[in-house]
Every structure is written in structure tokens, then in C-alpha cells.
Amino acid sequence: MERLFEIGLSNALMSAALAAVAGLAGLVCRRPALVHALWLLVLMMLARTSDPWTALGWATAGYLIAGAATFLWAGDVRTRVRTAEVCMVTWNNDAPTLIRSRVIRSLGATMTRADEQLAAGAISPAEYEATWWRVYDRLAPGVLEAGVR
Image (cartoon, rainbow, N blue to C red; front, side, top):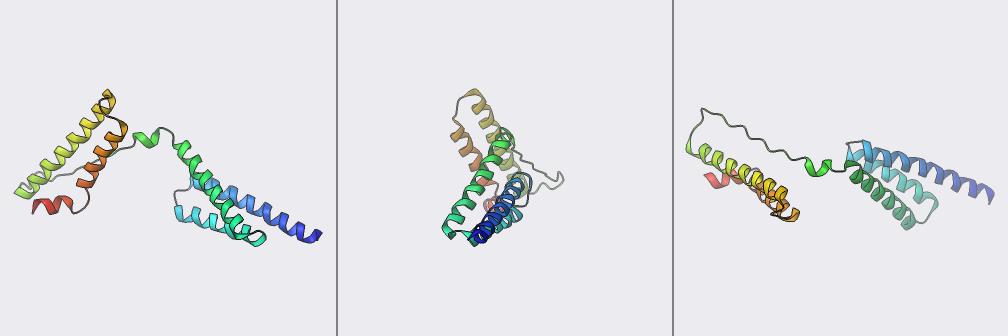
């Protein structure tokens, strides 16, 4: 019985160490597949000595804690990162290109106006996000081409 306890304890300690590595990898690594694989290893190690549902619960809790830590670690940065770039060839002035150019300028003006309105308190953050997503939907691949032909 004592030997079984030692095996269970060593497996739990190895699982905890691997969970710590997986948690740190979730914070630092930019490869989600690697992080998922590490958490799967934690789950498999826990399942060796405990009920599979208990193992799944612990692995899920660890994964959610790592996600919450990443969310908190990102802080205000996650709300400030917005980029939109457009590159136009100036000598290509056929009608479809000019129409696309005007649409893109209009969408850029919509995003700028939404930024200004949010800063002034004229719109809520939800309205702001909805405006940006409408613009993103219009900029999706194939949308501009379909509307110009």
C-alpha cells in the first residue's frame, strides 16, 4: 500500500511540474499547438492515477488559469492594438480600382470617426466595436471585389 502511495505521489508531483511548465508556456509561447500538447500531457499523467473526470477538471482549471493570467498580463495593450493598411498603385486608375480606393477611404474615415466619438464619449465601447467589425467585414477578402464587378 505504501508503494502505491509513493507512485501516486510521484505522479502527482510530475503532473504539477508539467502543469507549471504548460502554464508558463501559455504565458510566453506563441505556439498554441505546443501549449495544447503540454496540457494534454498533464491530462494524461493525471488520468493515470485518478478518475478521468477529475483529471479533466484539473487540466481544464489549469488551462483557464493560464488564459486568465495571459489576459491580465496583456493589460491595456489588448485594447490599443489596431492596424489597417492600404497600398494603392498610383498609375492604375481604372474604374474598379478607383471605386475600391474610395470605399477603402470611406471605411478608414468611419474607423477614425468611431475613434473620435469613443474618445468624446458620444458612443459606447460596444457601439465602437460594432462599427469596427462592420468595417472589418467590408474589408474581408473577396467582399470589395464582389461589389465592384
